[in-house]
Length: 201
Length: 339
Image 1 (cartoon, each protein chain N blue to C red):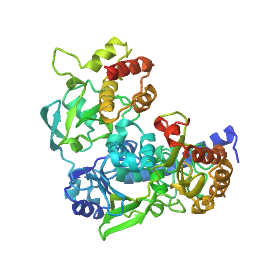
Image 2 (tube, rainbow over the protein chains, first blue to last red):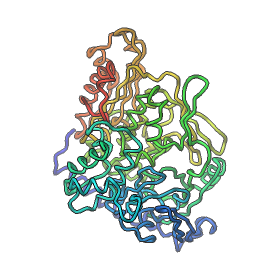
Image 3 (cartoon, each protein chain N blue to C red):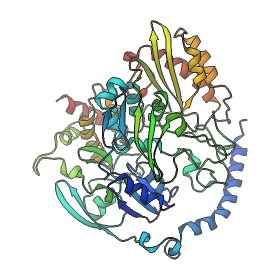
Image 4 (cartoon, helix red, strand yellow):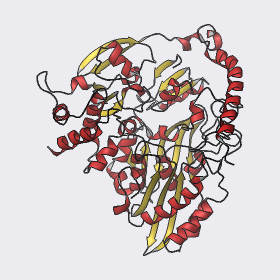
């Protein structure tokens, strides 16, 4: 049943055109929330900001935010901690990795309002003092484990979480457990070196 | 993302009441799949009810019959690394660790894993027709690029596959799904939880609106001696299975006394054929017998062009994984990578 590339393209093109035409109406019906509010009782539609207290790097932060603000956006845009990076915003690259109650999570796939009773640690909060870097930060510098540095905060938070949650013994295991953090510069070899060195020490 | 209201609940009854009374409301626990789908506007709930603040269902308990009860709100990683799971259900631990990434497994819950949606490209692309996303619009995968799609149990309306790894082990282990809903509690055998697409591909499973998974029961039989999970995919980590096989064997010498074989990446639900498992009883554990079992499992498999290769791949994976199960200590590499 294999179709030729041309057939395939033609088929997709036709159905997509047809679909877009019909979809316009459907889309309008689905998305006119503000003007067609009476669909549900008004109480259910109170999209007001909520007062949320996030504990970030040991400090309580009180925010007034809407429910759909991600933890990532809350950290970067509302609290001003821009060390945590936004890469894909879909949980594929790991640049937004932070530690929640010591466990590595993706802040882009979590809503800020869901993290009220959680101890959040970002790259800004992993060092024990202002004067000294976290041992893994030192290892990253020592092993030249980055070029542009955009993935680095996520890589480091992820590695800290990984060492606590699993007990990997081999480089292959570490590579598998770190696959949620992508580095487009291709510094992966040195990132692995830094992590292996830190695990050995 | 569309606008929505957000509520925390503290009891399961409260959660069920909130969602069952509003057709546009959804539960959220880990959020790893739902929030992503909301960003793509594939799912647009009006209200999210957060289950994380419920005090129960956050633990793994022993059951009187020798099995375990996994709370629905325990994270995938906590389950995979749990001492009792590693000791008695290593197959389950392996399948969980073969899926997603460390970060996602820390967020994703056991209940949510059963409820994740397909990763069919057309389901995610809101510019194309999809019967699962918008019933009645048509299936773009049939006649489209269908390399990752189903070869078993599909329908003319949908050829999407169910993406979970964990559920392949749960199917092989014959877990039971405990559910709470507006009409009280009920339990479903794992085989009856997910459904085939038929003419209603918008329904992934038999959970009704307002019902929520509260726990999973594992029977005492864990196949801890002879088990294997083989996951074949485009890269060795953080990719969904093209074909995956979970095998559990109970052996006497080299003779099979009991066999369980479940396939992932080939159908709208974890694929098991009891007839093939019965065939293996009292047979020698060798490539020939696993091959015959594979033929029974893959009877009626259909390719859609780009996924024709899966039929042959699945057969060879079943044989290879059967042989790997004879010696799990040496064959089970990180991430279910083939040895």
